[in-house]
Amino acid sequence: MTPEDKEILERINEYADKVLKNFDPQKTRVSFQLEKLKPVMEELAKEKGTTVEEIFIKYMDLASQITVDKETKFQNTIGNMTKYGDIHDAY
Image (cartoon, rainbow, N blue to C red; front, side, top):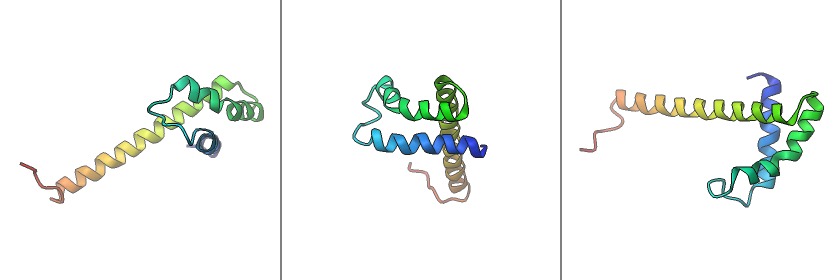
């Protein structure tokens, strides 16, 4: 992840923490969440000389990448625990 990618991800996530803090993401429509994030995405697009759509796509790609990385780390941890006998068969 480039420093610019990290900046975009952090700024949008920080903004999301403020404007979406009282909403359950599992129960809130994605379109509503995106509308709430639009101001920060517009600001970033203007700064980067690109479109809001490009910022949105980049954000979704970066967020997906983070999710995959976390899942991979989790699976590796579970695999190592099983490999070394830290997790016992429940049956």
